[in-house]
Every structure is written in structure tokens, then in C-alpha cells.
Image 1 (cartoon, chains in turn red, brown):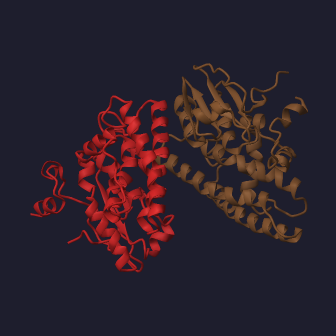
Image 2 (cartoon, one colour; image 1 turned 60 degrees about the vertical axis):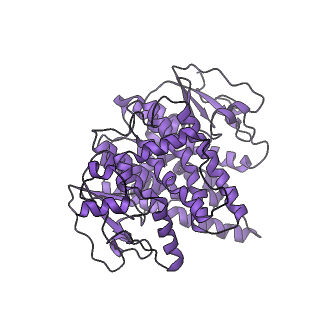
Image 3 (cartoon, helix red, strand yellow; image 1 turned 180 degrees about the vertical axis):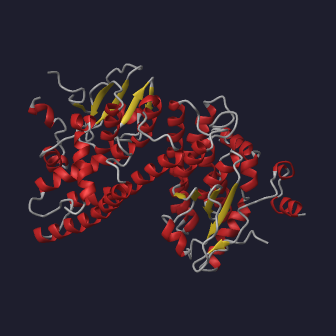
Length: 267
Length: 256
């Protein structure tokens, strides 16, 4: 019944085939004053926030590699004391065997190395380095995206930020065009695909927030469009990914109250 | 005695791109750049043969700007360009796994990378000391002291880490990736500050015994012995680095 409920709320066909009834991220966001969570040191625990794109990278890596994990969600406006004293105060953090590994790129690499089956990085050193540089370059879109997402500004500001995002989208489209593969990682999504995805998932919010300003991914970027559709078909993406309307609802919850509705997806 | 491979003139705009042996590592470098030093140290530590192309960063050659992201270091190998010192250092380490500088254990490796990230926080105040400005000399001195106080926060982290580990190097009994990635800024602040700002006590506190021991041991590491610059070299470079005609080749004209 829970499965059917979730299928209805997310509305994706693949859920029936691929969903693990356990969605460890559907837990309340813990705030200051909360008791420290008990964790199993031999299991990966992710300190997360349901709508954070950086933390999403880590969750995607775990899902793509089929590694079982637990989630502790963090209220980022009212951070628990134990979170601040044990970590650098940001999500995601991977907690494993008594250690805390900060920084989404570092903890994603850690997971890929700790659990070597189904490698997300290519085995060739050059290909791996190029993939990392692609992440570095494509993710230059994150800054302008945040400026548009968090502050209102003027239509002129938005247009300027969006043109920076657009140049990165064009770069991605060109890279996909030049390759014979479906994904940056090859026949299935690799580290590059997963590290970049969270911001691509959020881009359609901009057109919803500011309709009529042309803040949409151009149809002319066919390769990018095809990649986006293919990514949504991937179980790791569709299990955790959220539709733009949901992201928008979260964003709007910021405007209505000092604390966003972190737990809005929980029943 | 032949001069080291990195003692070559810094190429400026107008100079043609040198041809590179695709099967040999070429580093696009600047003799005094701390980021680029990381890459040179890794190559030396791993005994990987390499060529150096030095770049005049104030008058960058067109080919450098077009083919790379415009900053050093860049590793050029088999027709590809790998930017970003951390990325190209990892690349080189993976190229020759027999001389691994990263630990084998993924957890240990991740912890090392996090320490490098943490120590990176020292960079801003480090430059803050060098670039401090004010309306009068006393104000500038105060600003420098303020910035150095910030630098010391990272030095304290490093001291505590070494004390906790109880090993000679951050990486254990022998020098590793963590040590080499953080070294270049320590090399500069321990040599340049006292020459540029004598009497201002911008030194590592004597109480930081473990850190001072680490520094002493690092100077004995062959890679650092070969490439590191002692004495007033960094100070001399910084003293004129802001000028339009910054002399990147100052060590060449000095003679071997």
C-alpha cells in the first residue's frame, strides 16, 4: 500500500519495477535540541537534506551502486549541536565505521572506492581526470543557478545569470554530441553524470518561477535533451528525483516562513 | 652540471607553443606558483620523467589560453591537457600505481583529501599578509598581524593533526600526497615573511613542535630539496610580482 501511495505521489512507471520499498530519505529533518541519532557503524549513513543538490550527489552514488544506506536528514536552518560538532556543518556527510567524510565530491569518490563493484569512475586514469574536469566545468552553472533560485533580483540580472547557465548547457550538449555514448560515463550513468545531475534536475524550476522570460533549456540542444530524458529513465534518478513543481513548492515555502518546509514530502 | 628541467624561460604571448613528446609528461608551470609546485613535487616524488614549459602569467601565450583553462599547472600527456593541480596530481598518481602517494585505504585517502581541503583555508589570509594595505605603516602592520592570526588557525589544525597521528608525515612514515599538496604555502610563509617583514614576528610559534619538526623533515625530502626555494627567493619574487614586467626568470639570470 505504501508502494502504491508513493507511485501515485511521484507518478513514475518505473517505480513498480525498481523501487525498493525502503526509502531511507523519508525521515524528518532533525533540528537543534534533537538527540543524536544512533547509527550502525558498519552501514553507510548519509547526513542529508531532502532538497539539497550537493547531498543528492551522494544519495545518487549509493543508489546507482546498490549500496544499502541509512539517512539522517538535517534541518539546515536550525542545525543540531551534534551535527555542528561532528562535521563541517554542511550536507552531505557520509558517516561510516566511526568516521565522518565531508564534501559531496570527496564522499562520493570514497563510496566508489570503498565499494569497488559497479565503478562509477572509469578505470582509465585519463578518462577519469577528464570526467572530473567536466564536472568542474559544467558545475560552474551552480553559482548563477543559486543566484536565480534564492534571490529575486531583476529580469536583467536573471537574463545575465541564465546566459552563463546556457553556455554550460551548450558545453554539455557539445560533449554529448561528440561522444558515441548515451551518458558521459558510457552505456550507463557514471560519476560525471551523477555529479552534474542535481542542477539539471532543478533547471526547469526557473521557467516556473519566472514565466515568459525564456529561462528554459532550448529545444535546439537535442543531445542534452535526450540525455535528460535518458537520465530520468535510470532507477537511481527516478527513485530520488523530484519534479520541478515539487522543487518549486519547496522554494516557495522559503518565502512563507523563516524555516522552509523540509518535511513537506513526509506524510 | 646541467641545470634542472624547470630552469627554462617563461614563455610569453608571441612565443610559439613548444612541441611536446606525447608519450612523456609535460608540465605547464610557473617557477614560483604554489599550485603548480604540487604537480612538480608529485612527479619528482614518483620519479616520473617530465618536461617543463614555463608560462609568463602576465603575458600569457595565445595557445596557452586557448588550449587550457589559462592557469598553471597543466599536465600535457598523450595529446590531452589536464588542468587543476589536484586533478592532475591524482592523475599522475593513478598513472604509476607502483609509487602510490595516496594511501590504499579509501577511508584514509578521503581523510587526507579533507585535510588538504581544510588547509586550503590558509591561502586567503596567507595572501592577505602579502597584500595588506593601509593608510599608514602602522595600519598595514596591524592588518598583516590580523591576517597572520588567521593563518595560524590552520597551522594549529596541522599541529594538532600531526600530534594526534604521532607520525613524521601527515601520510605516515613516509611523505605522501597530503604532505605534498599542503607544502607549497608552508614553504613560502616560512621563508618569505621574515625577509619581507623583518621584526614583525610572522613566524610559526615555537610551541608548534610537531609542525616545525614536519617542516624540517620535509626539507629533507628529495623532491623538495630539488625544487623548493629557500632563503630570500620567494621574497624577492613577491617584492616585484605585482609589477607589469614581473621577472619570472629571475632565477635563470642568477646562474646555476
